Length: 137
Image (tube, one colour):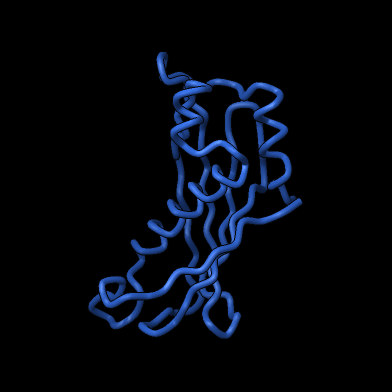
């Protein structure tokens, strides 16, 4: 089992009026993480949509902030799946500052939606297996 791990720099436009990284930036980093997870699985979002006819769709986002991030920090982001079902998955996210300290944890629940019917649709066996390598319980 494995995680997708990547780093992001913190720029001035990430900073809010309180002088630390804005809460919305974490949601943006989660979006980047989801796309990187799909790429790691070998199914970038365009391929997932065009070849399999699936639309990955979020239904829930949760974030718990434990420390602030500031301009000059680099954030390390880890992404993995905690649950993989036939039509849904739960993605987990951890955010670490430059000192390796946990600054936030997040979770998103997503569905696989049929592109034509817009109904939740089970993954085929091959696709399900591709995602299994990123499941950590």
